[in-house]
Image (cartoon, rainbow, N blue to C red; front, top):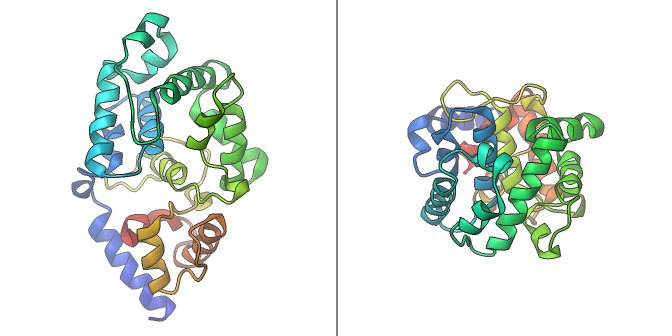
Length: 247
């Protein structure tokens, strides 16, 4: 396929797959259970972070977690007591342990009380760096400014160390893109969709290589940069709209 044929092919797949009817079994269905902006952000952030492994398990664990917060994660984050934390059911998702969850709760409280919330914190990081991948690394520094177990850091990516940051880029897609199809939320106003990077995983990378959009063999930060560069040639304003299509 030449570049025009690839664009036409993927544009057709975007129309087919970027529809609300396709998200029932996708992790994005979890933040769609909420209506308040902060609840959507927090549910989206935590769900994205644990989005590896079987989808059924991801969805079940995420639902169970937010039900334990009485489906009000923002209020829980801001106002929980020590007893509330003790009352949380033991949460484990693969290598994400209960101790990791407890730190995430405290770190998110810190983000919302001292840094203006997830949107403001990440937007400031983006505006200071001019680059989403760099802003993810800057956000990680803020997120882990409280005392924490070193092992918990592995649950946030470090693009500056080569991570493709798949789950974080997926979260940013949810928050920044507004597709008018009921899929991505588009509730963050000050990061343009053109700045986003594709959430690269083994499935989308395989398709991208078959279509000639990716030549790098490793699924790392350099591969994400290469793929985004080629997707920008297909749509300079909204390169990550092709995420569902590639997946």
